[in-house]
Length: 374
Image (cartoon, rainbow, N blue to C red; front, side):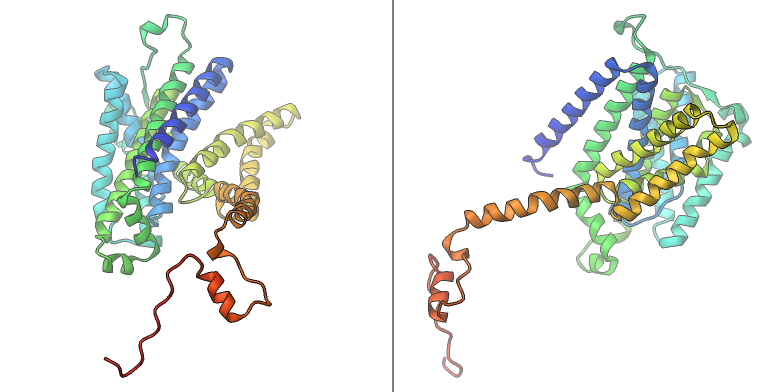
């Protein structure tokens, strides 16, 4: 990251935050809840984008790390009633430590072996809630006590405050991930993803880069789990099944792997499409059994359409469309303002005149040195 790009990213964060505040005031409580839901989903998907899209590692267990962040948040708020900022920091730290341990253990695994190991982790970790019901509440889970601060007034909607907190944390997380993406760390991740042998020959510590990406991804998942806890008000093992991990990976693919803006598009799809599909099923009077399958079918149709139309995800497709419209204009503008030494000569020009035209304004080339001369 350079100091030139930081103000631009900060400006984007401020603009998005202002839009979120405006929408949360104008919309009803359910839409505020959806804003908060999108916020924690995009935080988790962005972390998975770093792991899979930037460093080339496949994880099917990020839902388990969301569970770690969620249960840490629930326990701290339930027993200590700490400020939400402190709780979020501790939840992120705990998840980072666990992610670091798992990342070191999984650093030598590749492809399906890494996916299988993280899949096993995604199944085993949430099951600890059943093993230790006295701590984690068993199947019923833990209730999360989260209220709006008193200075906002007694009648301030809790869902609006949840939307504000979740969106603020998500924006800060995305800003930090974007900075990492454009730093030397991000370049090392891409080098390892593209060719580990070449990256090692270039002096990059491949194992350290993989572990670092794993820690960043799991920390983002832990933050997302903490936000989920304060938004839903309940932390139970049923919320962190393997379906959640697969949904996160699917959202990253739909939005565009390797693109942080793509995490937003993927999160919008997995949050809004099932909701609108359910509304359509209800408005048409479908039975409960049929209506329950409509969101899943709609989600699958969207996934297939995106992969057919935009193989590189929604963000990749948007970039291609923008380049298709802006690219020719940019080329035409460049041609109109090109200096003389970039003008293509006509076909009837002699080689000498062509050479003079192409080198106009440049220093004349030195004659080649004859062989055998000293």
